Length: 339
Image (tube, rainbow, N blue to C red; front, side, top):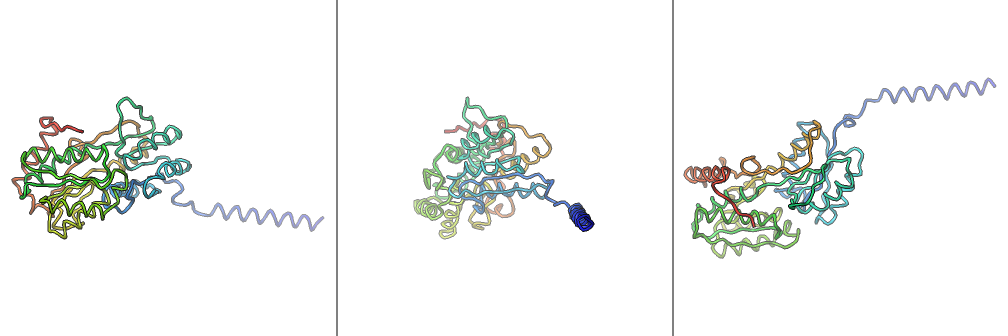
């Protein structure tokens, strides 16, 4: 009996010590940190364009807001629904981003299923009359406005009176880039010829640099001296062609000057990083609301790059003309027609 009491006492002492040890362990610094998830578009992280802009927003949110994040790169994009579902099923993730218009239908379905979660989609395709779930923030940009400005720059600077446009996937969204660009060129230079081509009719067009290079070389050989691209990772092919032939290129989404220093005339930038950061901030502060948010020149959602790297190419006279055009677009004096 005495031996049994001693054994029971020993067991209780060990359990007490273990319990104390557990209490002494410091809490993981990540336990109470907000966590968000993001699924990349075709091309993934490292595209030096659209996806990298989104990642930049997450990094800023981590540094300034103290959040954690998890990312998924679905490769060719065919696995995006399961990627969204995987993140949505996680109890520690409350806000999930889909990056790219291809996510529109998938993220809508997932948001309707996981009503306790919050979602945001960059470049969400808004369809008139189609209801957006209340827990989903649809983010769209007026790419045609930014493209109009870089088109005007190209139209003013071309010496051959021929410029080019290179699209990734032939789609309604990329047609907005093309349309705005063409209208900008024609606004300042009605007689200028514009060569247009697309890498593909599928998402593959956003990650096929060799094909983009082939198209770019053809456009340059046909007289174009400036080519604007909206093709994601495929744009690397344009920059390679520009360097080989010493021609000018216009970047997209991020400032792409470093891809071909001296050959990048400017870039049409979209503040994807800013909208990602702001959505996370709103969520953290319990101010996140679903619905639609549209950003153009007026909202500083799109712009063009003008800095020390390219001001030797864009003269003060041209800069002044472009800024006048900006104000006319914002005021509505210049109306851009979308296709």
